[in-house]
Length: 202
Image (cartoon, rainbow, N blue to C red; front, side, top):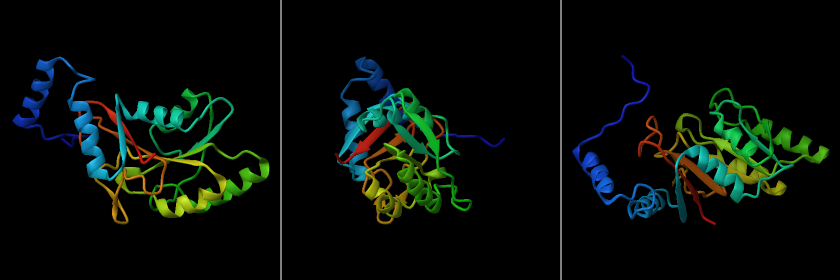
């Protein structure tokens, strides 16, 4: 059998869960800020907020970016629905930028063309949500340089990418983005049974 996802769970993991259960603080106990701090130390980001899922993390990121009714958010079409739904949850509209056929990440040439056209039409996006497909980082520096003149908020959907690296930084450092969102669903790099996090330097 080929498993979709399978984690290694040992006795220390089980004991850590039991310890939390015994103290009856499942969502607001001392372990949550410890986990957030560990994520900051690992990724290099300044701030971290843990949430119940990456879906919620993307929603929170859109809210923090000020996405609302009448706004437009761009993402890629080859991702889980949460990458687009987070904008819809805020009352915004969604449009898609095509992907590069080699990397399966956002196509920078398509992004440039779409931005130029959107500027002519007066329909620039409020935010761009990138997806690091299968853990491979998008070319963050190039994308940040492309969007800089347009004042678009850059959000990384890094649900697949914890543990990955871009240039010399860990994915999640937000070196070139405003926010990055992680997932701890059981099929991701690490799991807390469910959960997500939003990382930022702001």
